[in-house]
Amino acid sequence: MPDSPVAPLQTVLAALADPVRLEMVRRLHREQRPLACAELYDGVTKATASHHFKVLREAGVTRRADEGAQARQQLRLDDVEDVYPGLLSSVLAAADQEAGVPVSAGR
Image 1 (cartoon, one colour):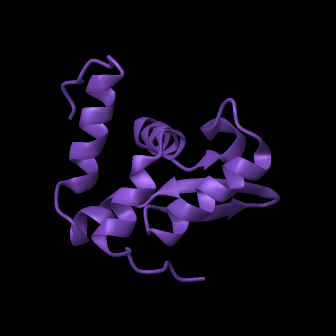
Image 2: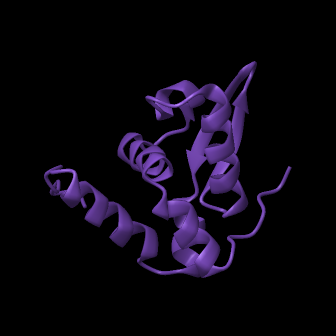
Image 3: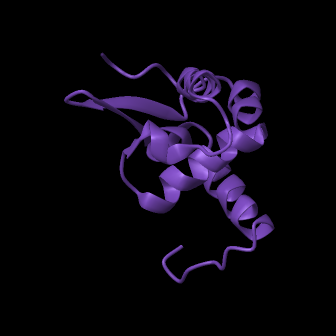
């Protein structure tokens, strides 16, 4: 199934505004690979996590990448950056700074 287009800016920003979703995106960005859904959340129910995955997918920020019976989430960094240059990189850098994560030389 092809990816849906990246949503309008307001929708993308709303998806990233939720702390749980932002942490999911931070984890995907940090790992630079598709991650199993269970690796992306702490402290919320599976149903709540599924809702957050749906919001991120509908905003065009992530895609579902099925590997056998395992559902994974993948960050669509390049797609979002093509539509909104610098947006996701800036939001993630600010979130890392707020969380006290040191900026690596590779960024």
